[in-house]
Image (cartoon, rainbow, N blue to C red; front, top):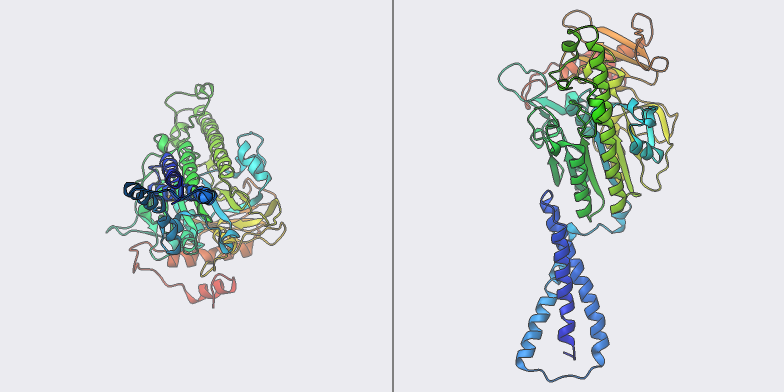
Length: 552
């Protein structure tokens, strides 16, 4: 060793300790596995920086004279050398498929650097008409509206079902709800889709495909319908649901509010070095009960203190009191819902800022959407899950494309949320496999799709078929023929004039009837495996095939 070499050897050790300190300071108990990988990455970075400085100084010190070193001095230097070089073992794990540094380090190789990050942000029960980007003048969503300025606004995006598990099940599988969700058998006739509904076993989810293709996958969610116990953790390396799986009063404390979701997701982003990644977030605040912590006190004090918007407080109960209470309660619900929209917008805005701070924003596809809308007495009902009207099935869909992808700012034709999975897979260069959708259109004026919606959460069964011009709603019969509603989407966006007694949309009605019959024949209502089901009749098969809904 040359003069000062022992002192210089301390530099890799100091760098390692600095990396250890930094990694510990960034530790998050919410994401322990990711924190461990981040710690390894910081230690490796610190050692490498120290080692490079050590190497430079050692070269500069080569001109020094050799010194006579005693036995004890050589022993100390030997220990220092071993200690200084030990963290090199971390970098050697890059050669191993499951090595620590390979899992922790960014994916910088050319094959991966061209693939975008995917960020899916869901806001539960968010009505499209409450966003400025969709024409609202209430000023509730400044952050979403700013995001919409650099995104594509899909003006006619429709959900496959009016409630969460069925709608998002279709999004993550590109299958209709009747093929991707199932009721667990309990020895009696299945009831409403609440406690026993799960994702169907054997159906592959979007994150499973992305993870196999090298994506880091994570979810930070609220809503018990999206719990691990219902099958949603498949394909996610990091998965959190703040609610658990039991159906209970929602948003009972701060742990399920938008602020918590944003802060937890921000921690994940700060710890994440690997790209590309798929991050899914789901905010619940705009779901009943509407109780935003940001609601001005003077607004809340306009109404009786015992009023709330929980599920036990249905409109019918207030309507029975007197002629004035019903309309006043309706207004109360609308105003409290609007405050929740404002609150959710605030924290989604914070998340978007964090995405920009951590980098990778430009090379990300970022989607903001809702699983369904919300009925605020538009057609005499409250909440969602029991009707197929515009305010429930039409949802906001904003897509910021990754750098280099060209798209129009507004798309007016009808699109389906189920096409999101196909869009993500196309951009990620992952084979589509059995995905049944198609990528979202990027040019306005292309032909739209017909969106079939099914599966009410409670109440009488209904289905709907939405085209660029018309929507048909089919009320299934208990016996005898069913009943249709038909609306002209161009002339009657509020669905006030039912055209079912005219000749409007006859072909659309027939397609809806055939689709509904096929769905009722194949819907699983018993055990997950081997559930009894009726065969689709040959005539129904022929019609479905002619309509393009069945292959040969």
